[in-house]
Length: 584
Ligand code: DGT
Ligand code: CA
Ligand code: CA
Ligand code: ZN
Image (tube, rainbow, N blue to C red; front, side, top):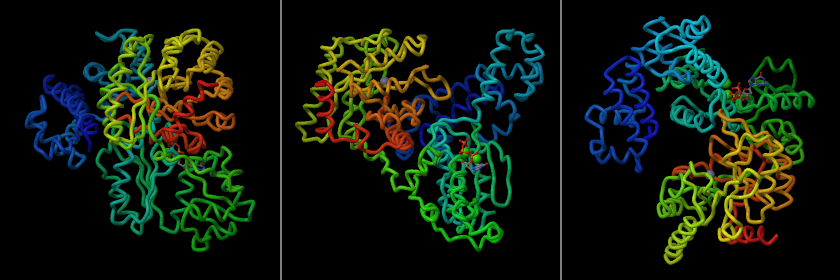
């Protein structure tokens, strides 16, 4: 486990101790240790190897042992015993927003509530409101929290799904009885929101593979278990399904369980129209032959299946029945962008506004990563909640960036920082900096950060006006959505895209895993209109550079190639394009 995963467990331990009513100092010590670990700037592994855990504030002997155990093995006997000592229904209640350990203890002690259904019934009959320290208002909040959980409990951010899937996949890969394995379902298709995790493996001993899957660390419970498949619930509520098939079935099962359902339906129809039958077990020449798996048309890989149906290979990201069949039939599936094509990010923050990391630190880190450039686009002054810069602080920042760049150039480095701003789009579509200030910057990103109460037409006009400013290169996170949290503004998206096409303004694909904005479903239209994409990290910490990889995955879902994405260009070409926008 890395530091963030260990921190998460420690934090959970703190909450569980509080739920049990143990000494509050003990529970606070875990919460504090969790914060210390997440704030580490070097790998936990290294600190442990060098025996320096004890030098961190608040990490005594007991915590050192637990952290070491977790980091090394991914599990902790103490944690497992603690969980087993609390009724599972009480732990589930922690997932309801507005309910902390203290309140749950009170509900348990005074109303005997030990689960979500019981709690809902108690709220509906008014028994919760009647309790000391609760009241009508808090009862209403709890009901809302229950409803919210019902809607969102089975929906997860891709980034969280990937973090949960990684160790499971690693366990499958290293299992001696596994021949081939892969994630499947929406994770493999790279969807921004994931219902559950799906895994597929081929093996001659499915029982052994299922058995070790059902014993993985981090499982809350096993919900179904058969000879060749199992479903588990991980801590935190995410479900994971595993299917184990023979290696001959593997490519067919992989195609089927990758989906999407809509894509599968067309695949199956296509087989039928060619006198074939396709299902998760194989491709067959007739309905009768589907009864004997040995008669299946031999396919080693998914490529072979597509080829049998007269199709070029369709990458998993495009399997949404959004035009992939027509393209594959004509051999026109584009070569999609790869994250390694990206040379840097054009929208990022530093500690001059609400980011972490100084200009120096950012330059050193991004150079080390192998980027060719990295823009510093801190907030403008209207974003005071994010410590936005006024023009005099901005000019001071430009001087500092200039000095860092000078040093980089003197050392012969193949890396540079770009100056810039994420300038607020004001209520009427004007910008937070005057044009002469914007003209001094390498890159200008214009974004909305306030005034969300406007109607769709007003919001659309604001964005279009910003795009019409010749000093704006990029519209940042254009629809403002926050996945699982806030809906996009009620914009006329195509009107905004058309305005960007007309003015040569680029649109951001904000690669923050809570945003992925502009949505992948809109990129084929934007591309058709000739709008270029910038895949930006909107980094507020050094590690956010990793968002480039996620963003590229979403860009692939939007059918984008390297040519569509400006930050795949080397600096001389990008520089020329940045200048060209202003010359228009
Ligand atoms: P999710 O879990 O909601 O994020 O979405 P998926 O796509 O992972 O869906 P899931 O986990 O229910 O099933 C995995 C794949 O299995 C799905 O993408 C396609 C295939 N599949 C499941 N049920 C059906 C079905 O009723 N018909 C067809 N054609 N395919 C199905
Ligand atoms: Ca799934
Ligand atoms: Ca599933
Ligand atoms: Zn930003």
